Image 1: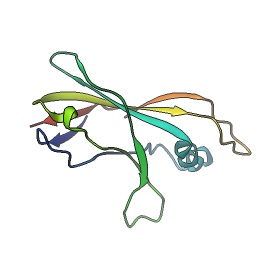
Image 2 (image 1 turned 180 degrees about the horizontal axis):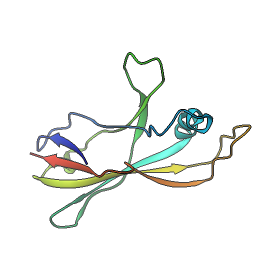
Image 3 (image 1 turned 180 degrees about the vertical axis):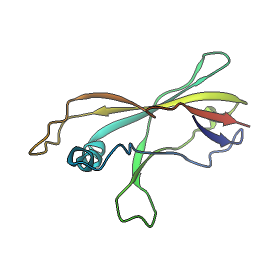
Image 4 (image 1 turned 90 degrees about the vertical axis):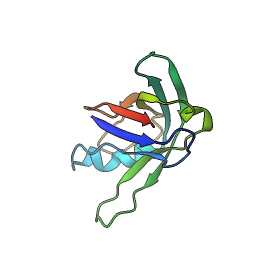
Length: 127
């Protein structure tokens, strides 16, 4: 479980989630190229009411600023006033739509969608 906190009515901090880190094999090394050719959307629903607060809002990726020798990328979402105008706990998810425009010599990446985060839920607390 991953938790994120933001004050009601605030637009900061930006929601940032590290892109998938599942291995260091060749398909993984090409994953960031594929991610850059994708469309990424954020959705968020209220856990108490089940009402969707954010539906398929556009996201962007940026390179992580760290001292690591490997490239890491973050999926980012800039909050809108309406997104955080009420207190509550929300479940968030990112939908990555792979366009399939990039080909790697040894590997093929299918078109389709991937829901992030994988393996744990993302909870947004508006306090």
